[in-house]
Image (cartoon, rainbow, N blue to C red; front, top):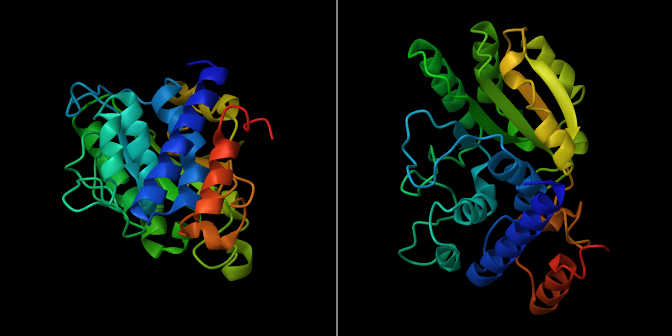
Length: 276
């Protein structure tokens, strides 16, 4: 997809997220919106090698959504990519649905049960090491939240990956600078964040997490890097991106839109309102 097509897909995904959360009366809309452009870049920007008709294909790239509470965006992505019918999105968090509040491996395209924060990077490091041992040519990409990086297990996995020079591993951090109840730099300061990753022997790239050119560009030379290091991409984002009254507003970590909120959000996410 070109940039205009990626932009249109991101709008489609955010609309799915909005309707799923409104219909279920639950869900983590703010972090799903901040991660949407990252996910669209991965699945529609030519980065991840996957086959919706054969989700278990051995040579597929592995993607781990470590910030599993934002799964509503991943479900929309997987449906649009063809892993399951888009009509199934209407069942989000309903009785009997496989589309629960956190992803699990019953869902085509989902590699791991996640949402207990801090575990995704360890899983990803294990997959990357397995690929090396098995001489398989897939890459592993893990999407973390920045608040999730308070977890010590993240840094244990980062130290392991740096030590073993897992150059087939990517950690993308959704750096929206917010956690559940506060802004990260007020709650428990992460900066100098990039330097922390470098200290664990990772290559680091900082990008605008809402720029498709920068997100896709961060992977262009991935296979030809000579450093032998895993890659950390710090994607600077806006929590609630796409709906003005949600952006950078703490309450929208997991609030549900009222009928008035829903009407305004739909307007802003429509093609006509997208140029606000």
